[in-house]
Image (tube, rainbow, N blue to C red; front, side, top):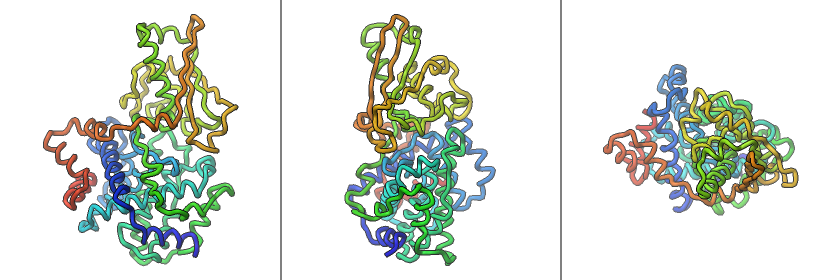
Length: 439
């Protein structure tokens, strides 16, 4: 059996379990939390109004694109380690957009399709290897197109042959470059991926002929620098489901996940200083140098050293460390589209990147990533904190609190409606949530 057909078989015939559906519900709540401020215009200069002038025709493809962009615009959305990207912001926009053509779908069918999409996302990340990302591809855009297509195939209850065709059409459209990080095109990658998946489904249903074999093999061979592991696509499928293990990682900050352990190390340094009874100003005024160490290549995503705007700041270790030292948080307003917080920049200019050459390269195992932040003061004192990726992940993110914060500007009645519908207990909940997100 070919690779494409083998993957199609698993998409069609496997059944996510109750725990996978439970994790999917949590993912939907986080998705609502990160997309709602953009959809409701609570974030100035989000880019969404401009996109609506181009994609305002109300079509299912445009709806998928706009929702994908809105949910990734803040870089506050979930991450999946196997995928090395953001699965929900491509899978859920495609599913919610398509729901209007399938209003009879049950919440369980929707959740199963979501879980299948995450399974395919994680497996594609492993099959494409770290080389795919290292070569300059943005996994959310490229592999995400296929993950969303797989979710749609399951949601549409396609047979194996049609699923294989859909995957092939999606694979031949998959594209997206990390070179766009720091611009509005980066979140638009999620929208493009969702739109392409919807288009692939429409073409499949229209009976457009497409190859059912050999396409995924060609895609992996062309985009993995000879390091592809195609067997990862199907072996040990769903044991456990990848929406459970390693699971969706929900973000505590609206910045690139590759900055989070550095931010947390900076927060620990700030807390340590204040616990000594000294004022914050005495720390900030006396810092002469800040170094941040990490495994070689560990800053491949957070590559912008001197950001020019709030979006670029999300990918800057320098800006993130300085902002955390100053404010004890990474505030959404300091990372929004538009001008930087110029109060942060003088401190950010003191940050130096010092890769730890004694550590294994990040590409070998990103799960072992760490950041060690060292503050050098005028009196010769040094303060140091090291934070690993695993320590960061051990601190659970309060998704419910994140959603309440996102809905704080709504009326109590509307908050209650959105809260209830996000639980997806009934078909009415699914209908209400899909309607409000598309609207």
